[in-house]
Length: 329
Image 1 (cartoon, one colour):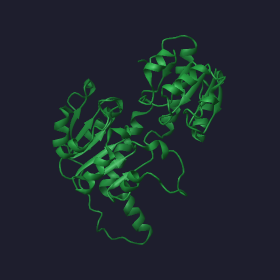
Image 2 (cartoon, one colour):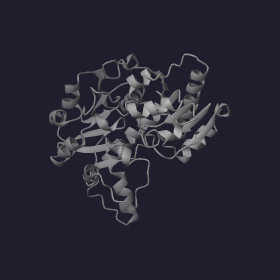
Image 3 (tube, one colour):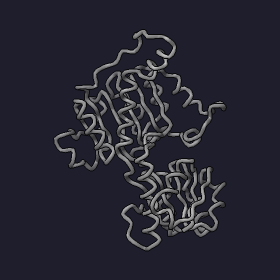
């Protein structure tokens, strides 16, 4: 099977090439995103392998179909960038990686919480400058804090167990409660999350219903000085509303691994360029905001799992087998 990779990085090539199923495939790696301007590159390929910021809108899907592509392999869990109805019309089969390493993402959420709270990034810089003063580095005990978890799938469940181990009181919202968390979390409505939680961590998919879940209204209901963490999807948060919440001190800390307009920023080295996104640039001016570039998934174990699962998904499709990871409309 000939597979075209888009938005590929050196680590994609390394981990996919060493995966045990790699010998069944002929890989071509493209650095560019898949979109209407690059879909022509897919001519002659059986499948494309894409990531979170690739464009799988109707026009791109039509181009893939015209070029003879039959399979689309998402090397990620989310599929909000795919027009599923058009994919079905074009008989394009889509597979994803629903759980590559829930521990990687959940642990990164904890890393953001602890770094923001204890200001370890600022302390590190101070010590390197010979400044050992503690002024401005005051934190709080995470033990005993009320943590609100939005979404208790695989990642949210791992995060819940981590925070339970730290002695937190856990409240959670999910339309489909996770029975494995019985006795660990208290399921409540979203309004209770907003009004009761001192730390809120998002672990839910991006859907039309969850788009801008965090907005002016929800922020207005939150406790003063709340900490907000998002390692899920950027568009769960209305960034302009977030900035207003930070300016008013309603929001005390923000840790983001995702951003709603990240497609033109993340995964690239822009250190010698002027950032054109004024909203993102404003967000970066706050001393109580920490942003990482969609790296929560980025562990050896996760990349190995992504490669193995993705290739097994494609083998299942090629053999006409039922694939548990197929995405249907």
